[in-house]
Image (cartoon, rainbow, N blue to C red; front, top):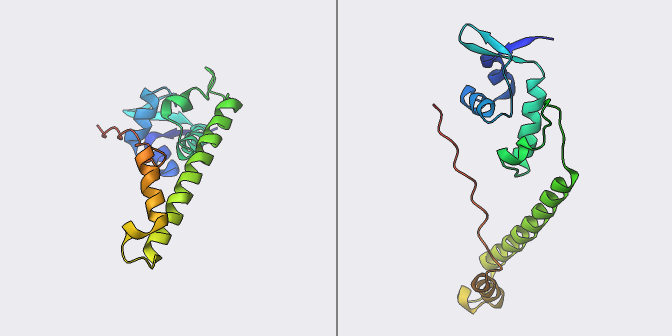
Length: 145
């Protein structure tokens, strides 16, 4: 097994060193030592970073992802949590699909004004009732040190 310095992990994972240091601070990854000032990581850190990337892409927070690892670092993924996230994604997909379809209709609608279009009026009523919501804002990224 090969030890990788932080620059090599950064190059191979595509993540900046600042993100790797932040992940280490959050307990998501752990260095195994240092070579001079550079942190060293076990080669398995790349697989762990891939799991973190999949979790982030699915919309999990870093705190939620941290719960997906046992204290020994092995994956311990809660299947109920995955099901809940999949259900959340299904809901988001439905909302976004409806919005996309409404926008396409509004762009091609022959009504003289959007406010005269029954479909556009339905979208407005949905927005008034709270059915149409803006997507959840992601937490701002922590600035690099």
